Length: 354
Image 1 (spheres, helix red, strand yellow):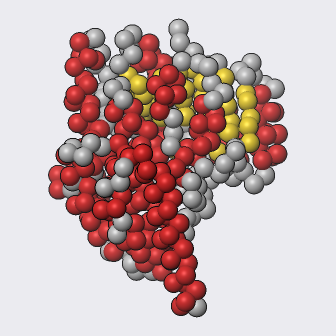
Image 2 (cartoon, one colour; image 1 turned 120 degrees about the vertical axis):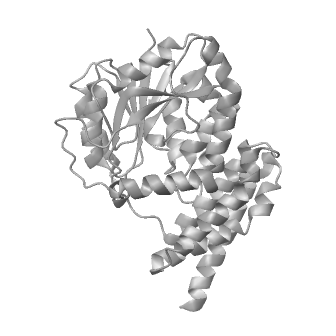
Image 3 (cartoon, one colour; image 1 turned 45 degrees about the vertical axis):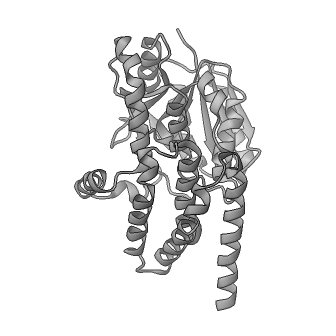
């Protein structure tokens, strides 16, 4: 049987960690170790809580203060403490059912030829029975499901996301090996952060990309990035339908409007330029997709925050050609230069208006 480790990267959400950590500890198939990488303002409170939990379990529970306030960097810091063949990355607001890990590990163990580099848990709409959620989920979780389902279907037909296109392209190219092995688990083109698990050897070769959170710690799309790179490296991403997780989507400090829009688009550009071949269908559809996103942001300019989001998205999109033409080896440096220049220019414009 394979062993697995759990790595939790957290910051300023002790209330949620008090709910999720006991669920990780209480799995029917226990972890070989749990690593908590915390970058909270009150780290000592988090450490004290984790140490109290450690007293009640035989599972080694390691707590580290994050070297950087950067989610990908925190995830890598935890990875460096793992020796187990599988590493799971639930968010601090991921609420596991008692057998979540058991069903994930069953899929890994069925894959004897290691076709799967990553396996996703399956989201559900309610917390595990008997689990009280102390924090109201954010508004994103309460969107009308029917409306979102219709919108998502229209988008898939008319403006498919390049991330999904590339993931599907790679999955199609790789799936024959899984079929040959008699594996019938669902294959997915992307993986959400709160559901991520990996073969440690695959992840150690790739690692999370700390460039994505290097300026403001806002690392949007970092989960999609690692999933696409797993596929690009030659491994599939599968799903475990019976491995259930409820994502509470605990509220956090809202990103500044300009930064929210700016890094949503900049990170999308950066990942596509880094991962996707120049002639791939996904890359060819990128400009159209981002124009559609700008249209959606423009439609939400009803308040100051919405206007700032739109302004940030436009600023990043204006760098489209520069980023997509860059040498992949120079992308990380260019990312920092673009982010610093545009954010400085935006701050100067605010000063000039005041």
